[in-house]
Length: 242
Image (tube, rainbow, N blue to C red; front, side):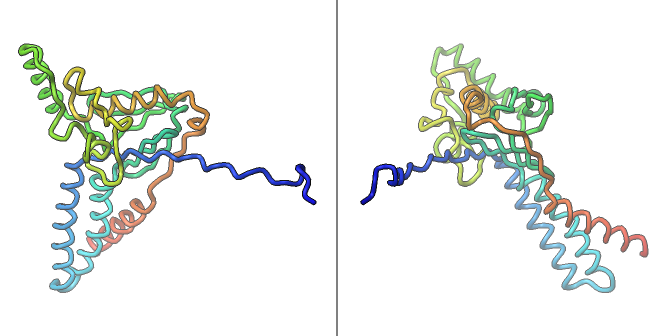
């Protein structure tokens, strides 16, 4: 006969994991795809139709250029959930639990500061001075007309299908189901400034949480650095013996 002491406790329901909100630059993605297409077209044509050392030069150039194009255009992204901020820059991936984030700063670039004083640039959330001037003009017109301001074309790097991905796929940005609707009720803001406002709000809400504690980790993107270095060495050798 089974005693109460020998009975196993009932299984606990799994703790829900929050989904990442993904912030990327649509202009960077579009420019990167175009540059990659151009580089591959020219490179493959040189490999197939070239003579002498031309195919080898083309291969070396592709090894060197393609990783750099990917690094600076397609790769950068910021992933935010309830526990941590993950910053994927051209050559590094930085994981910052919210408990280790001290503040964000927006001037000529958007940056995050840790409690230890380290600074990391948010490559995928570029500052747009033109966007700020446009937002200032819209705010001035709204104040003059007494009307209610509206967000950008898609309501920011976020709301609806665009929020949270400065164009990225797979993320539903914003700080909840309303997708940052409260931002539209305040002053008109540039799109990247709205994103930084969302990150600051998440930091304020999640910094004290137990699940938001931990250490900052930094990993180099060897998948980018290694082929680019090989291509650079091969290209230098070919040019040197030229």
